[in-house]
Every structure is written in C-alpha cells, then in structure tokens.
Length: 239
Image (cartoon, rainbow, N blue to C red; front, side):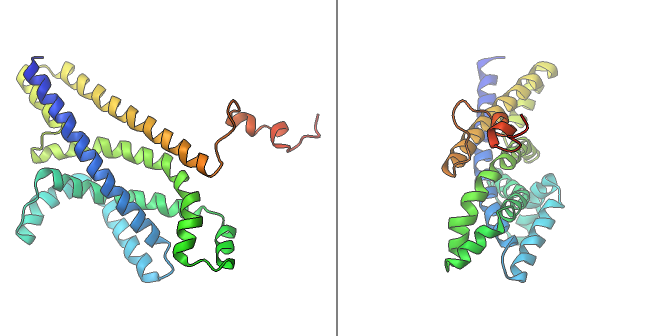
C-alpha cells in the first residue's frame, strides 16, 4: 500500500480507539447506575432499571445506531455527529449488558457481610461503598473484559453512518486497491492486536483489585496448588 492509504488506515484506527474509549466510559457509567438500581430496595427503581435493561438488550445495536443517527433528529430537531451518535448508541446498548454483570456481582456478595454492616449501623450508601463494591468489583472484571472486546467489535457498526473508523477506512482501501484478501487480513490483525492489548490491561487491573482485598495467591504458588487438599488442609489425614 502507498503511504496515503496507510495514513487512511491509521486515521481509522484512531477513530475506532476514540469511539471505543468514549462508548466504554458511557457503558461503564450506565452499567453501575442501572446495575445498582436493579438491587435497590424500592420496587419502582428496580422496575425502571429492569425495563431499561430489557429494552436495550432486546434491540439490535445496528438498528439503535440507525435510530440515534436518523430518527432522533426528526424527533428533536438536532443532529448528532457520527462520533457522538455511535458513542450514545453503543454506550447505552452495552451498558444494559454491563448492568447485569454489576447486578450479579452485587448479589454474589455474602449476605452476612451486609448484615454485619447493618449491625454496625451503616447507611445503605456506606454498605454499598465499604462492603459490597470492594468485594464485587474484582468479580466484575473478567465479564467486563469480554464485554469490552464485544464493544470493540461493535464499533465496526458505525461504518453504516459513513464514519471513518477502521472498518470503513479498510473498505475504502480495498476499493482503491481491488485487493480483498490482503486488506481484510490486515484489518483482522489490527482488531486482534487491539483486543489482545485490552485483555492484558484488564487482567492487570483484575490482579491489582484482587490484591487489594487479599485474593491474589502468594508468589510462586499457583491456584491449583492452593486448592490441593494437602495445601488447604481438607482431607489432610488421608495420607
């Protein structure tokens, strides 16, 4: 490829990264707000949060992009630029999936921990901040990592708006060179590299968070070793 075509691909990568970061931040905010609302003590709050989740999980991300970009201007009289339209559609859609991750992680915390907070006269906000979230957040990281990879792949959908992301730029290069196999192979590899870097980043974050609550095994001791009977003391008499 010529330098001009490579520059087009690099611009596409930058647009994809921008969209990924912005939509991931929106999805994370939505995930925690709606996920926490799903376990709220008031039924109306749980109902509204559940309704939002079901609506956005039950609709296509591609159709949501179409709706935000083409229908929203007709209803409100203003047009979002493609970057913000894509951010809004993807952030709200993937935030609905993320809210289920948050809800499940919060519900997985031992109820005795919450009861202990009540015995200490903690307010609901204190119980959430000091007891529930510190234990639940590390458990959210692996499923959030998978969701982030899905979001990365979902960014390719914005090419339908003519947005110059990686998928759109790659298609332009393909048309210019009339070479499908080579160009799409490059695009696949670029997506893989970005996804691999995201995975490593999330694994590092998971280790740091688990270290904060003492769940990281000692250096040089594997998880398998920790769960062997002679290590845990279970069945130690069966020599």
